[in-house]
Length: 75
Image 1 (tube, helix red, strand yellow):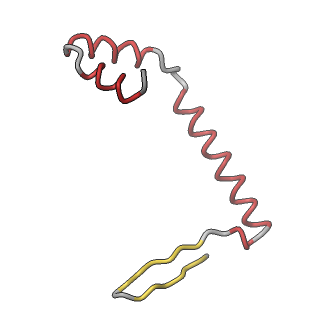
Image 2 (image 1 turned 60 degrees about the vertical axis):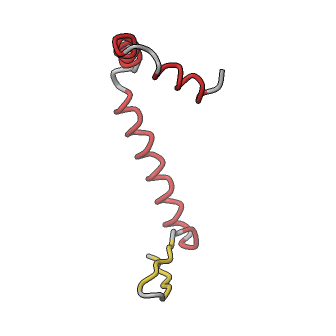
Image 3 (image 1 turned 30 degrees about the vertical axis):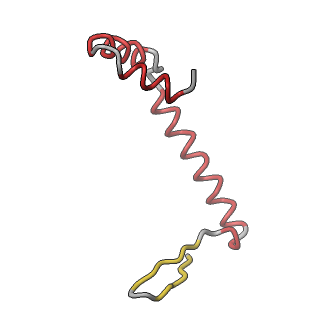
């Protein structure tokens, strides 16, 4: 069963069954998931920041448009 079919099947369940399932899913999430996720994001951001400090050519840039004109912007 693919995800789309499973999702449709789950949404077709009676409300009480969906609520019970949601409770079980929520209970299965580790208590410290947010702390662990936040720490992983912070470590990745610090790693990328150090890489860009060491090699400025890695810095991100973007292009925005205003009144039909394009502008490149970096650092």
